[in-house]
Length: 389
Length: 99
Image (cartoon, rainbow over all chains, first blue to last red):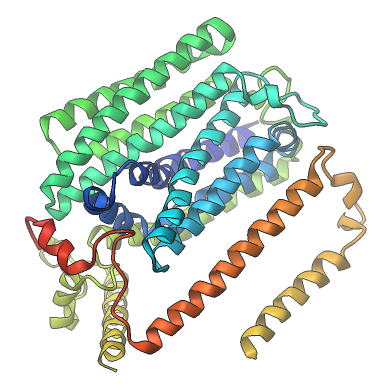
């Protein structure tokens, strides 16, 4: 029982990480689509491109992690969900594939027309995936997935609540992306983009809030059990989500920078955990399938908990390093500014706050920093040789 | 030659593992037919996936060859921003406030 609950918690945490990291990538596609023509959209598109490029593959790792845990720990529920909701899941996967391909290809092709086509592919697929994943979650939450299914069902995910959840997910992705991009623009000192993304973050916050309220109202009418759970045991999380949205709106309007991203991410994570807590311990509402009775033996669940702990220890620091390097803009091959300092002082490691920070950086982090500086210097040298040839 | 041979070797490995395991999907515990979905439309989705990945594979090859051609010619770097104006004009237009 405890192992099953622990794995359920790990799954929810992984879904939340996907939502607040990968979700922002999808939201970036939304703002890329809405950025306007070549001239008007140039600056926002550059920011979106530079923010997404170094980290997008790492961000979508969480989806793989989610799926593997889901089918290993809860195979019967996995079978039911994959059978009944095959179509929206296929469409979400198509969105992921086309999004990645469009994003990677559009930078390399020549010719404005072809770039625009690939860019449209990237942007539209960025909208499709969160929408269809939302419909899947909505269908599960409202009990549309039976325990033993033999065929896909169109009605399961085209009800009002699943569709509203789909729009809600898309809105939340756009909201997170706008908040993150505003922070990114602020850190680069691009004031026009700060104002640009502040406006969009505010609009996205309001739209997402309205969609959440609409979804709650719809649940009150159509699924009173889930509604009572959400406003009963999951009420603290619902309140956290609402408070976070309002706090972000207030901070954006006041022009504050500190903590806005974290509060926005916490709000989105609270929505996901609220859903999980409301449903606990049932995996598929409307059936008797709980976390412990979804098909995996106890030893499997224990193994997953152990493996997740090992993964957190081994993968966590790598992610931390990736995001910290990305945050210090060391990951851009063509951008001379951040890299010049490390080249002039090869022994100093990464430029920026690290040199002035109190306390000694550990030997491991110094080694990593030196290795990074060396790698960057080598890449720059090769690049110079290529250009001089 | 070695590039193509590497891909052929990888595909051969996959054939060994996936064809060699038949008729079991879990050796001696479950057959592939027992594990397969009872949903319809499997042929349709398989066809669509093959078509999509053929297109993506061809596009990758074409783009890689175009990149190699550009590198050999020593062309200037591509526009930094998708469908944006070239960099010099962009940096003047940007008016950034800091480094």
